[in-house]
Image (cartoon, rainbow, N blue to C red; front, top):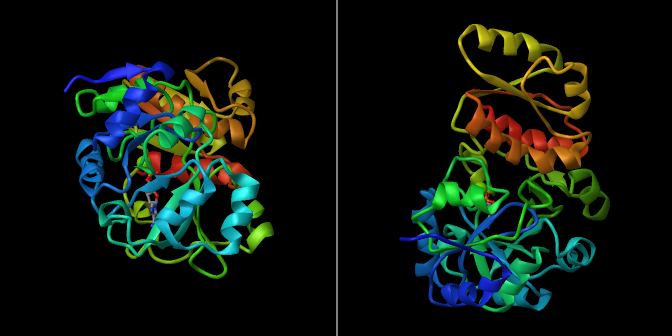
Length: 322
Ligand code: AMP
Ligand code: MG
């Protein structure tokens, strides 16, 4: 299969592919998604094949308009509307009781469904012109999530027919997932919308169960890993790890906050995460992609686990799982 890359001029073609039961990779503000018609089980199956994704890991349904939520959810508590008004369109996924029209392929057989309203204009156009779209991130399972169309091409070239190029994702890490089927709501995956913010609105709590029966099954899989070894080290250990790697014949790179990089005085290969949690979210995956293409050993700085840094560390720890 030949993989084509288009920009906004390709939207009509993309909509037709979705309605024909094919896959389209598309930009969202979080990361690129690999989409199929969410109401077509056979189309959704193709996502799992293209990505080599385990079948018990459900997908998020992407919608453009609030009213469409009733097509995929059978119970919509008032808090869903409150969160929609505050954060949507935006990087928030809400878990709700699913309606019968949602095929098991989307939810991995669960009785719940994840829904999200992406803010990227091309994502909105694609959904409005076709159907509710089920999508995970548009990368091969386990690999780093894509934040540009060329990241998608690198992983999925030959496996899908179309990639819509909508530029670099602004957020850079996946959506926050909140389970609204529980009282109080439970945070299943942290993102740039933080637990601190959500707990002020709805007393949301952090997930504390075990990963075997994880409510967000994706939590238990290896994730976000570059194709070269990647370790995480405390700020004060970065340079000794780097020197050791050089001694072992490696060409390493340090990925760290700008403050840390400034303190290293240009003596090392570095990639910057910027100065705060939001910038670190934006640069984490793009730096990991760059790192695996130019270097052969990645040293990630261990960051404080507060605010958005907590969500960045959630991904970074998985990228560097030793
Ligand atoms: P990805 O963003 O690529 O990780 O794919 C979507 C993620 O959404 C999955 O990893 C799941 O953990 C999560 N998800 C989707 N649907 C549900 C659901 N019904 N319940 C819990 N988590 C879900
Ligand atoms: Mg993913």
